[in-house]
Image (cartoon, rainbow, N blue to C red; front, top):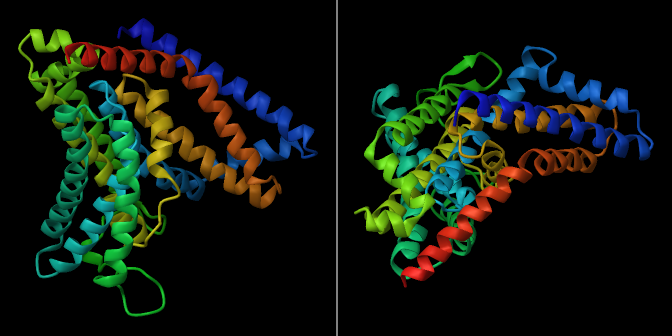
Amino acid sequence: MGLRQEVSKFAYSAVAVVIALIIGAVLIGASGYSVKEAYSNLFMGAFGGVYSLATTVVMSTPLLFTGLAVAFAFQCGLFNVGAEGQLYVGALTSAVVALGLSWLPPVIRVVIALMAGAGAGALLGFVPGYLKAKLGAHEVITTIMLNYVATFLTTFLVKTYFKDPGPVDQTVLLPLGSRLPELIPGTRVSLGIILGIAVVALLNYVMRRSVLGYEIEVVGNNPRAAEYGGVNVSVRTVQAMMISGAVAGLAGSVEVMGTLYRFIPYFSPGYGFTGIAVAVIAGQNLWAVIPAAVLFGALQSGGQTMQLFAGIPMELMTMVQGLVILFVAAPTLGSMLFRLKNRAQEGGAQE
């Protein structure tokens, strides 16, 4: 995509956000609340100081990973709806590994725990990828089902094997040497945000500069043509889902090691599903996942302040988020669904 197209897309997104906020203002006013007070609290809660900015970054970090996971699967024409489950298995695996390797130096311990979380996510991503490649099972269905498997399995494992003594189902608190370093002391803005940006850069390089990325993109555009061109479509499909799962697994690892400092069942408010909205807004540009994640992080951070100080129900803030998705993502979502439909038709024609 050329520079002019990128600027045009950014301008469209900015206008779409403004329109969504205007419609949101009408809904807030019609509900009897002060629009000025609501939006001033929204802005201040998201960007009105170091603490507010830190909260926005903290809320954006898991969305950066889950959004990137879904966006990478899009590159191969796949719709990974299983980032939520992959996040959970990555989170528990990192927590258990970090606690079990307390005898190792902190840096090595943290690196191994992150790799283990990514590996667990990749392993869960392998299942729908393999089923898609070998049996033609639709990845949307299989990933949705695996979300339940992962969520309930991690809860069972914590309750049965890894529970901290006490009334709450959770693991033992991670020691300092097993945590991601804080970038801003006292804010829980961890090294995770830097890691997320680095993973974006890495995957963007893979897609633009490697044979793997080229073949994944070709498969995403037209699997039948890719196979005629000598690409092993099955292998690339599985690899794309595994990479996507690994990134989603890192989302859980970063939350456990950089924010919560332990694994807590059902800790995610839906990071994997919000990541789908982030990916849809970003479209085919992996770098665009970063501002898209920040947008949703800001809406969540500011929405909490708006609810607390302006008395605006969170349901209204959720409607504003839905409007942003609707106006910003509609054209991109349409093109992606068209791509996915073509890929399914090509796959069916092969059979």
